[in-house]
Length: 146
Length: 406
Image (cartoon, rainbow over all chains, first blue to last red; front, side):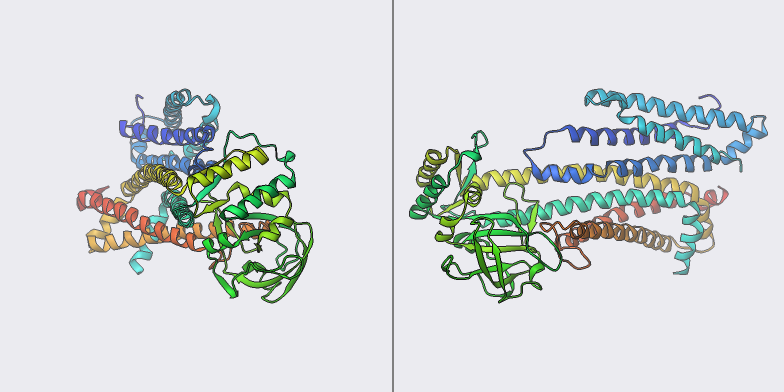
């Protein structure tokens, strides 16, 4: 993470948000595999959440947009300073994408342990990874100097 | 008001992604609270209905899950023997719902016939909006059968009107006379799933007496047995009936006493509600943490605007009022979305012609929806208070001079 725009707290925040999104998706999938025939009250309650699985997950992934937005807005001055001392915008953008992707991959790999623990398909979270990659690529447009 | 408008348009909406993120998170919190509140209210309503059966001497039939039932093998003579035995030796509450019948009505809904005997009728105490309560001493095949109709059928079949139709359980042409109209949204909770309800807005209640049972077919006989309730009985008498049913139909029934049922259901309800509340509480905490994080990052970005306003004379109490108003607006937006979704969901039953769930209500919402919305409003107050106070604390912790320099 040399020359990175990310500080430890930023990495931690992004990592935590990714994990919340992956975990919530996995838990919703796991709940669907449970046999709740004996408890209709819990079953119908969970159904009212499971029915909106995709919407809930998309809503939660929006938090990562908030993260990228606020992060890049706070780093505008730093980007200007870096360019002043000889860095280039292209390098900053490449480093930003690589750093964001590494945080994403690392949290995805960690979420795989939950996959194995809950005995779920390892591809369950892949669509979220794709959504997050799209968010990272879109957020590149926000890498601007002040 | 002008300062609030200034803050919303010039400061908050300038970073609309943060506002949208907050709305989505608060919506998740509201939807979750709403679902939980509605489940609890619905279960409580079901529990109250079941309480009418929790009387000394009441034994409720329940088909043993291990009993192998071949319904095709039953003969009408065998079921009639069981009912003869029941009529001679027991006082029992009998009820069978959901015999769907084609019957013209203004809303083109499917109409279901529900059969009820006098004892079950006394236990349920249906409230009427028009007309009189049911009478059970009519002479089947000779007199018109007095019936109660659901609120949705009241315009097509008002009190005093006659309905000539082939009865689905006796397969005979019967003449029904509308004696009364049930109150809107009269319902019944499922005995084993108290949170699920059947609404009787498009139902016809037919009183069942001994002669009617004798003329009825296997459908009514077998269906009614499934949750028949013996009243003023004893364990010994219920065991005799169990043996009698087993001899004639080969079905194994369990008859649980009022105390056994009460203990089982109380445990079942309480445990289910405890689990639901725990899940909700944990999820709400996670969502509120995310919402607080969202607010704190908003402050990181907007601190300059806040501190400049504080520098030129805005007091912290006024800033607090602005935040409360801002969150009040966000919660109002979410409550309005929740209201629209719920109303549309309820309206969907009318569109799909699903008569069992079609309900009447103020702006389409029934009483439990409104109560759940009120509970959500209360939870919103707590969430709003927590987030705003944390926000103000955070802003206060940043010196004005530092904030301006940012």
